[in-house]
Image (cartoon, helix red, strand yellow):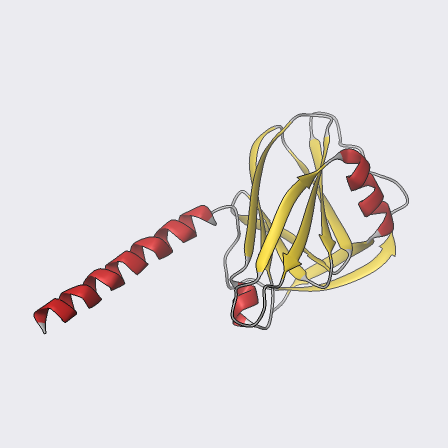
Length: 167
């Protein structure tokens, strides 16, 4: 009986440590309780160039997902199904997060993470897409840097995401 109790307690402690490590890894994301309503409207006619002393980031959603986008621990917006969002950043190291916003619990746990070092005057492109593994396997969210040729093409063929925080 004592052995079983010890195993249960140790298992709980190990899971708690894992949860803490996962939360630390997700530090690029914003608060979990924040959700967005997203609409995709119009198309972009040209690629925005960064302001002097800044870099510019595009995040493009591919496929039927809604994802919150975080930068350095704060949400900066959201994208939904074949749309994009953009924002300026200061030069230096940045940590980017895409968190699947879903009505389904498994989807809400899917997170994609990336980091990059921004240089003034440069434009950076990231693609967010979901891989649904099936009912018993977890869904995955990929957040990957893509080259400027592919990024330009995807921005120009996708709608612009407009979002507001859900109350």
